[in-house]
Length: 295
Image 1: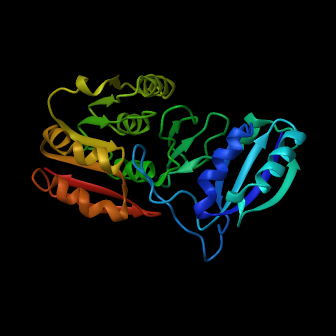
Image 2: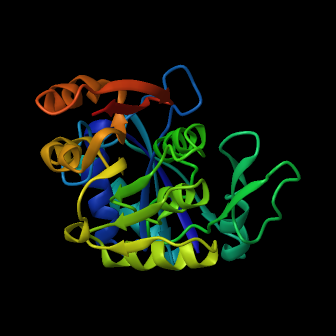
């Protein structure tokens, strides 16, 4: 593989990326050229929504090509275009063959949720101090414990373990099933793990089996009755739309726990849930918040 690296201002990122794909790039990625400096810029967005910006003020675009000649021809053609004004070709490099499986695995180390609760990929041994371990490998479904939204939910579950506090649990939008598995591990009386994505349902069922816990996996319409604990780690927009449904599933005195919410979205969520529950921010990490309410 051959990598062509370019430097572009924000207003040229989209047209240059499109041109690279038309010139037979096998993949195109965009990075913040100012990353790890004082000028680094955070960009957030949600699936299905128009992003606030395409690219960063100064963006590095990297395109992979099958052959060096194709990459050099792409660079030559781009450099001759009017829209390439203000952009620069930073280099062309032949990439050494990689053991991509080993490289991918090396990026996923055990994740500490608290002192004794860890998420551990199957290719790692659990740390000596880990008395509660969920074995989980990265896959098609969201939720490996590395993202702040998942980690905050797992920490909430760990704080509320035992003594029947979790009760009957609904994990709405279960993804990999990691939250449902944690609840089952920490004493929930029953757990429903539901998702609209069939791949997530399959993933959650397989992960529960691998961790030797029992959860019930299915579609959202499979939810029945009320639950002592309702968890939803999705995104702010669907969470707002789901406010009446989720609150109706919480039993009197039960807990509603929501994540997938940016700090700047907390007020919107409070307003959306105000007719049903008094949401409060109970934790925050890296620009994300965990919100909960007792009904």
